[in-house]
Image (cartoon, rainbow, N blue to C red; front, side, top):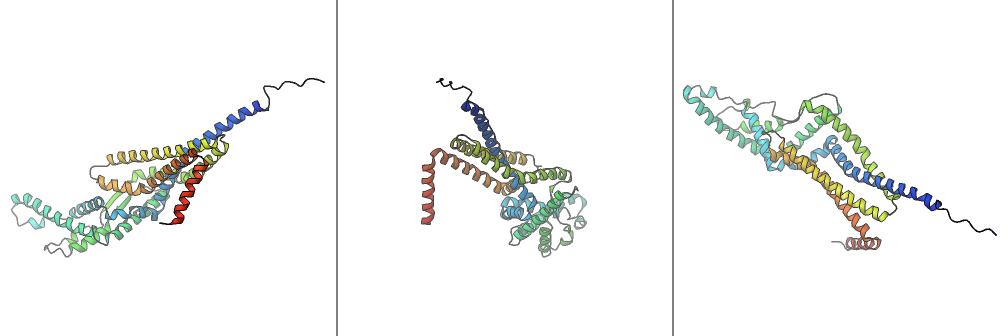
Length: 326
């Protein structure tokens, strides 16, 4: 009876080794891509909502109507717009020419203080939040139209409703001066987006709109595929959770860096506290999502490192607390 042949070193086990290594590498690459795409998809979704959804934008900036820095900036801009249309030449005709410059400065300073007070009463009044929301709703609709069209019209914040209210306040000024007809009926506008910048913002918007549709599902598919291909899924889940937490933290740091540089690049005439309040209001939902992603990633890594029994125990404790009520 012939002896059995020795096992070949190139048998089935050795043949499966390259496949296993390739599967592990593919799983790792998919997990890495998913970890990178997840915060990018979150940022793209936020940007698409702020740029294309008027209600979302108005809801973000509505609390700024009560922000002191923003109110001061609006008062300053509206007062400048009103004072630019007030002329005192006719009032100083009876004054000797040599005394006119000093008297003009004195009267102008007094008038500015009076107009500033009237504007501040409007800006801090009960009706200002409704005007504020209406002004921003109109501005965002203009922005939406500019992004959808192919023109180069600038996007402005039209403060005409505020100026109209100031006109009514000045009509009862009690100073014996006819200031109402001197206030500009066209209102005061703050340029949010200059005409040369519109094409660049439109190109960014198109990229963001596509990214918001593609990046989130791509991230989920990559993460799911990477976990399915991973040989050690518990270890892969730990690394994925930590990776998501780190990626979210890096996105938060990048947002803080961009915010600081954008504020530093503003012209001197723009109020930095007001601009900072705007930036914080607009990026608040994004930062909330970023830190939620970071927390979810850290919690996932912790539960995966603790093992299934610890995860089940933690879940049971949370369910018990939820059932017990407050």
